[in-house]
Image 1 (spheres, rainbow, N blue to C red):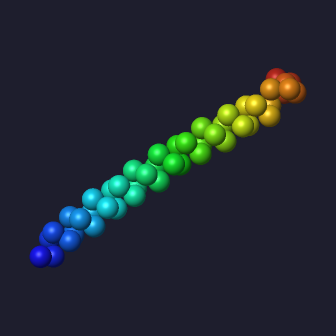
Image 2: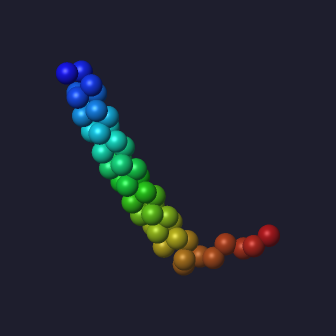
Length: 47
């Protein structure tokens, strides 16, 4: 029953990939909001 284990491993890998992707996206938005929040007080001069 190697194919059953293979499909199980694949689904597990996909689930991990999905989780890590969502976590990455969440972290990205968190970092972006933090950066925006930090940049708000002092506005950068446009060249």
